[in-house]
Image (cartoon, rainbow over all chains, first blue to last red; front, top):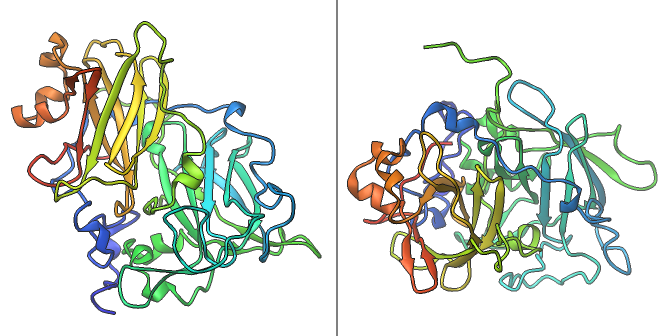
Length: 236
Length: 158
């Protein structure tokens, strides 16, 4: 596996290694030139603010979007969206998408020979509340094979897209489930080289949000990058 | 420590392209400009599983377009106003399968006197400046994004 998963390297911190060699598709797609630094104030450019018009009824519950209920382990995924100073980010648009319980996406390109579930589309949206909180009801997605290398399987994950307060708080990432045996073999997960940062991609099982006789609870907090500082910048 | 980025993967359209959101202004608006472009990889091949987001910070207009089979994306935009330091431009974010973190760039408008004094453009080489300025097309503007290669787009740290 040495050519697929590289050793840990804490010097990366929370930055993903964009040209991670074990993830083959990076080779022609990861930019090669150094990034150009913008003037300081452009890092805090306001981003788009979404309102209730971005949300439709039922968008937060992926198990009630069809005639019947989807197959699979029913779960509640909830958490808070925070800035790097620990402050809640309100009205952040959270968009999720995922495979069904058999590991199949409802997408024409997905040819994995697992059944589609007529009762599962696999997409949801919500806005964070006053406390930065979000909550989705869904089913646990299955692991699935992909063509990256021989016998490659993605650990079960839910894709998350977040639009925070500022343009630099945009984040697209993936939430994983605790204890997945596929972690050790997955180059996308390991493209985050710092194990402390990688741990931030893994949800925690949570008995407090587990609903008796109904659904397992998972908690996952998301920390977005630098926002507008409330402290005025010192004059140079 | 902030939550790290991961690729949007090949199936992002399920979650992110459920609506048509590529019109920053109505196509019937007098100021409407059709903007099209292609997302290309290091071999110059189209990236059909990418997504572009555009933000006009001055007018607070936002849009999103997935890429098609030829790597093509399209928007309807209006030219933003210039500010004291910046020529009219759109902020652009690029997402794709194979891209573990989205990339940020800017698109400028052709034949703008303000481009010469724009603080971001003027810090770049002439070749790089040209890469960030859209071209006039038959029915609007054209702006290609090159992830790699000799025409690699200028990307900014986020």
